[in-house]
Length: 440
Image (cartoon, rainbow, N blue to C red; front, side, top):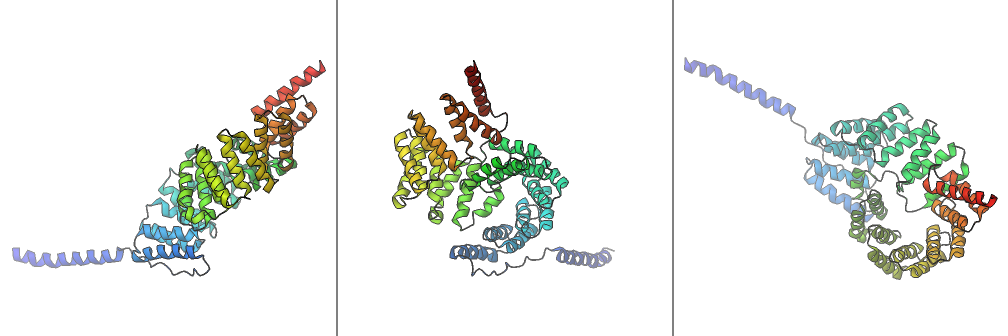
């Protein structure tokens, strides 16, 4: 009996093993394709070297999602968007629960396929519902397609997750403009500006709101600030995009990443990034002025002065370096030396309004009121959008009881600042009191 049972069970067991083996073969994830060969002859030598190094790692371990994802980052950093998307798709297939690859896939697809990008941003949001980035990115794509109701929903989601993040707030301002609600857009832009946000898109949106409100002079005045090279392009506060920029061999991308970190308060990290990337980016004309500025903002005035002074030895005619040196000297309390630096900056670039404004501050602190007032007027002639200079000159004119001139500046400020701005309100109150006193 036992022998009979064994004879029956053995074929059954073998049949089951065969079924399991066939099922395993049928369900096995196919091996990922090898990385595609790219034509990189038009890329710079540094870019080719970076791509070839990453390509070699991915070719050696084609089933590694990290290797394929890192290759995607390198390709995306050098504008090979479609090839980058293919690598992120493979990385996402190999690691389907890893939010990064799905998000970066959507990011790479955004320039050439909005529908596919929206689908993959949606999938990324499902993988990581606590991240504000996918709904913010979706909102931007939906706004570009004028799908305002859907965009509004995504903005609400993003802002509920991260109410203080700038990117969803910028999307909301753009939505308000598309809905023809310029007053609300203006107020929202002004609220962000009071936080010290120096993002290029904010200035663009604020100017658009002023145009819709039929304040063209104020809009043009604000739009002039877009010439400021210290403004950060939109998109600066995306850590995954920043992880792509790390692989770029373009010095401008390194500067952008450093400015992006500084814009969200990570000054020490931004400074270290520039210092570690000196070999790659120090030839860029903005490198040393930016490094000096970030060191100064991070509380290292002596180091900022040393950077600017050393750079000036090699480029003595650079106005931005004279400005950086003057700013450091001013912070260190060396006002006359700082004023000389600002004058040198203006000698090489007479329309450098920030240097002229800083010179006016030096003159004011030296109690040369007349020269400070004249210098502020010259500043506003070349930069009428500079509200800080206009607030200051209005106050000085009130001190000197030049009420007509002060009133003129206050009328302009009323078009540039919110009605409840405390500095503007204080100056208007002072003007009213002086006018009442004169009448009595």
